[in-house]
Amino acid sequence: MVSNPKIMTLERFIREQEEKFPSASGEFSNMLFALTLAAKLVWREVSKAGLVNILGTTDQVNVSGDILKKLDLFADETIYKTMFYSGNICAMASEESNGLIEIPKKCDSGKYVLLFDPLDGSSNIDANITIGTIFSIFKRVTPSGVGTLEDCLQTGYNQVAAGYIIYGTSTMFIYTTGNGVHGFTLDPSVGEFLLSNENIRIPSKGKMYSINEGNYNYWSPPIQRYIKYLKEIDNPSGRPYSLRYIGTMVGDVHRTLLYGGIFMYPADKKNPDGKLRLMYECNPMAFIVEQAGGKAINGKQRILDITPNSLHQQTPIFIGSSEDVTKCQEFLSSPE
Ligand code: P6P
Image 1 (cartoon, rainbow, N blue to C red):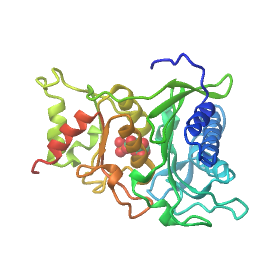
Image 2 (cartoon, rainbow, N blue to C red; image 1 turned 180 degrees about the vertical axis):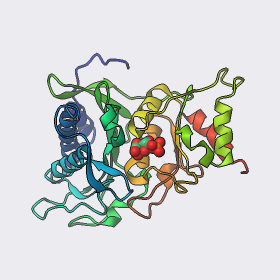
Image 3 (spheres, rainbow, N blue to C red; image 1 turned 60 degrees about the vertical axis):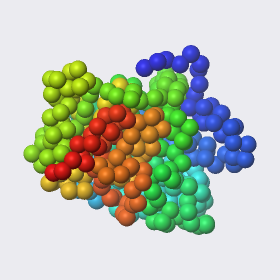
Image 4 (cartoon, helix red, strand yellow; image 1 turned 60 degrees about the horizontal axis):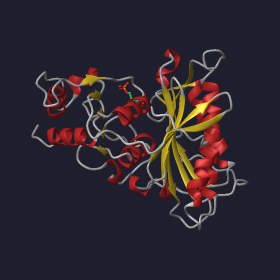
């Protein structure tokens, strides 16, 4: 990770980006500032999760059937409360909410829509393994008032911003607004995210693949053949690829973004539509990786070109270095 010589806080970077658009109202920046605050509030609990009674599970499951952790619910509530008081959001939905999250009448209904996964990889919390928050932002399409499902169910290429916070050995805020991908590392001593990775570019080809090999017998033959190809000793890369998989999409995609390679969650006999959610996980990650020079597909088309039908729609995903995803696509296009 290349350290950046200039001391630049995330807030100052957001403001400097805004200054490039003289007609900007400042609403977009204010919305990102609120997201920065929410990230710090979640980080504060995540960083001490082992010390207070916030570990463990609740007796609730989400719409996808995942058992909800106490920290899931904390993160979900913290983010939506922080965001709707920003006054810039007209509609919100999260992986943990069945439908739209109600925006209280007293909160203005702004011109942005926020879709988020409050705590991705939460099954890893109790083992102290990297987890993350993922967010995707659209501009509303309805004229005014409280936002609707139509404002949320937009195709991924319409996103105006996307990013994630990764709670790992350090906590980082990575985001794009369509002008490159930039990374900020939290300095806990001052409570500021400081610029650490300006204009992240993903290598055109990597040496690692990331997939849950435990699902091998559920995969289609083309994906089985692709994984076998990656492990061949005489692989054209000169050596077999290494497998890296932590079971948190934010961690696996972040490593892929910085080191190159490919992350995959294919459809399989258990999850015929794939497991990962289009709106909360795949769209934002695809926007980020494409902005960094990579590719993200569902096996047939760009993730960002998928027209959504429902908030919790799942999709297969193959995301990472352009050459690796292109090679993967060749295998996926071969006959079963
Ligand atoms: P599996 C975490 O539950 C998650 O939604 C993603 O963060 C992660 O990539 C995937 O599921 C892991 O799924 O089936 O390998 O445990």
